[in-house]
Length: 280
Image (cartoon, rainbow, N blue to C red; front, side, top):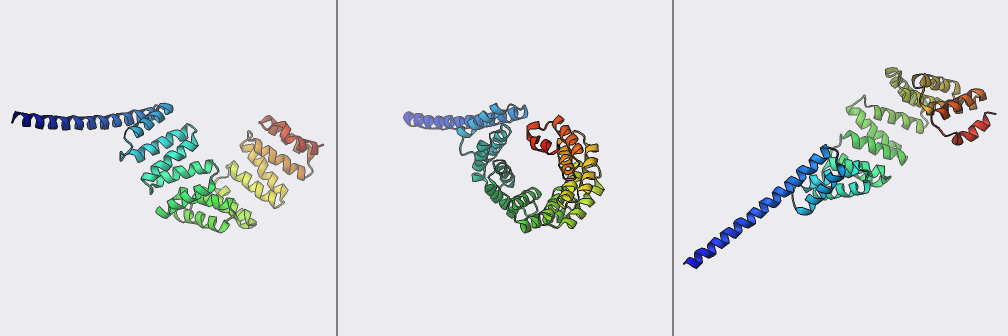
């Protein structure tokens, strides 16, 4: 009888001991995760990456690991480790394949790595799950434009504008589409509406100058460039545009002055050597 009691005691004690170890391991996992998150808040990213990896190795079957892989990917992205970040987001998506946030994060990295086809698939998957997602629509439209699939790009831009008529990125996207398709008057009308609302927006003035330049309305283009230069005299690209337009207008002295200003603002003189030669 005593021996039986002793065996029961040993069995119960062993079970409690093993349960204690499990609790200790879970607590250690949680503690490491908390330390990792604290490191992220303090911008100690290298340490955070190491701690996230440690937690994942400690408990590879933990239900929270999808979030840990996602956090690890974000840390690696901030560290400039894009390939590692893509792998981490992929591991997270293996656990939660329908996470639109993780799909968007991975797609953005694919674009940065010029893996356009892979980014396209992720954006399509997001749109399948959330048809009105603006980020996915805009970036997919951008990819369509790179592929010269203009009709598809126009559909995505119009979908965005159907929910947000003031979305600037979609508006500019349609202007660029019209310009690429040779619909200059439509593009100009859209652009004039935007400039009317934001008359001091240098980027819009540069867009209109490029559009008029492409149409060979050089004097009109020059007016926009000069106005842009007044608004942002530190923009080297403006003076480069002005020099090129002046060259076409045979205003060589003005072109040279514009190129000199572009050099003063940071454009290497060697890059403009041929242009300076044409000014003689």
